[in-house]
Structure formats: C-alpha cells, structure tokens
Image 1 (cartoon, rainbow, N blue to C red):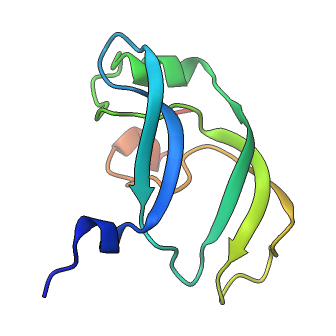
Image 2 (tube, rainbow, N blue to C red; image 1 turned 180 degrees about the horizontal axis):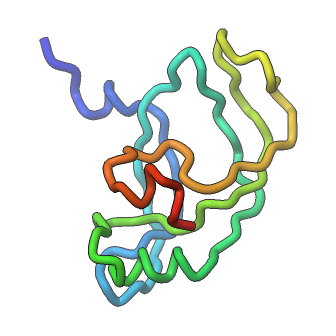
Length: 115
C-alpha cells in the first residue's frame, strides 16, 4: 500500500516563501522527508539571503519551482543526528553552505556555478 504524503514527509517545517514572480515572501508551512541514516536535522538560527536568492525568488534564471524558500547559507544547531553521522552530534553549532540537499537536476548547480 502506498504511503500518504504525510507518512512520506513527516517532518514539519516553516519558512518564508515566494509563491510567484513578484518575489514577495509570506509565511509557509511545509513537510520534509524523514532523515536518512546519513542526515542531521538543524534548527536554523540565522540565514543569509544573497542576490542569487532574489534571482530565484523572481524566477529571473527561468527555472524556479514555486513555492520557493530562499536563503541557502545557514547557521544553526544540530537537533538530530542519525546513526551513520560521525562528524556532528546533537547540540553542535553548524554552518551550511550552498546547494545542500539539491536535486542536482540543473547543470549549473551540478558544476557549482550558482550561489
């Protein structure tokens, strides 16, 4: 039997999302997939928003899928660490750079030319 969307994506999250090419941000609740054995969960404390985020929010590069939560450089605290994670533990302060958890669908992203 197929899983429901809630079963496939049980982690609840909150962000500020652009929903169209205006780039205007509004509150947005969404679900994330359950962590895999190599993943950590991070409580985001700070997030940088750079000009590439503005391009994405306004679909100026013509590949934005809405809604989009801009901001890809974050600092936070690890709240969960799965069994294969060796480098981080719960309570660690961490920073996350560009293109983490990307679908890697776009050539420029794969070559790390965005951000």
